Length: 558
Image (cartoon, rainbow, N blue to C red; front, side, top):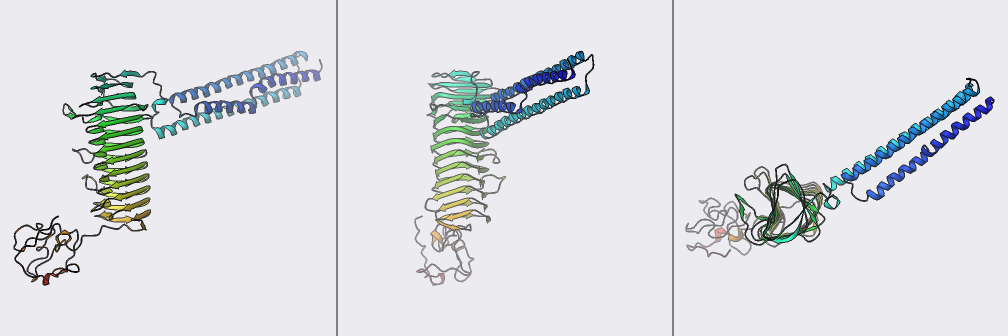
């Protein structure tokens, strides 16, 4: 065999072996197509649902296995090419008595180098694509978790959950962490959670109906956290009579919790209570579900804080809608609303907190005496609609640790007030408006005792847009008491100081009998007085023109 034949055979073997392996495994286009198929399969089959921990594990395993398989195939390709080159060199050596030309060596080396470079480049592409896919999956999980918090029950594996069915007159006690699916219909029975303070317990309500006379339907005595997940639309909890006590604790709600309580899910829950609907000593959070609550007390009550992130909440026939207050500590009791839909009809306050109320989103429709009451009230986003017979929004002295403030930064607030001495937005401190839209219809759109700052946004008072925060008009000429005014008036001869003949609460009888305020009523909130007296409105008589009389003026009805 001459040199040309040897070189031709070497090239043929090298191309054949390398081509078989590299052509089947290492082509970039094919690898990219396979990777896209892999990505597409995962995307189509799995990414339509929110990724959970199990999916992430499966995805990472799939990527890892795919990458490892390709690497193994690449190694086999390298081995085949190396063997082909070695065989070619051996054949050449045998045919030429151990002698191989420099030109043949160079060609073999070039082919090996070229194939190795392709393998390296393809390996890098596989690794890069795998890492990018894993990164995208991880980012998707984080985004979903940030929106939903934890994965809702329809995405959870409940195969390890314990099933509990309630029966008449028999309470069920849960004393360990875990997931429990509650079903059945019963009377005079409770589900009691009494675990350790490190245990997290989930109660899945799926066709769960309880009716009691004096005890909570669900009572959390001890746990780290308790999650109630709503499944289906046939869940209801009813308490009809006067609640009893558990030692020193008055368990006064259909759902009563001494520890953190969260409600979520895609199902529904109806609560009817002779006192409170849901009550907690710590945080009460709503992250989903459809709640319908009627009660004589507060629909949702907490001594610490109430958090509303999502869900639909329908409240009717309750005294208060949301109520956060600790009678022993006025530095606690806050409400934060980040989303969801709240439709509240309340006899007193729709939303009441001792410290602060913050609205960051959601849709609120409130019909009540007062809409939102607390010490510091802040609207950052969302829509709030209030129909109130008293003040629409009231920033009052509720907490000794805070100063009253109403602040509007975004969103929209629409207030429709009843007649009488009512205010759209009333602050015992300051009012600051930086943005958003406030639309108030009523006698007194704003009333404040501190300062008012208008820095932006839209203000509409009784249908007319304005760029000023007006303050309530002050009293009249004597108000209900006729002459009185805020400071009343002095005697004609100047011997009596202003205010003695009328005072802040009206005026006393001329003969000195009776305390100020007995005659004349309150005297208005501002009144006006002159230096030595005051002039009555048109049609009246000036003090110096009033005829002397020893008889006390007739008392008016008020």
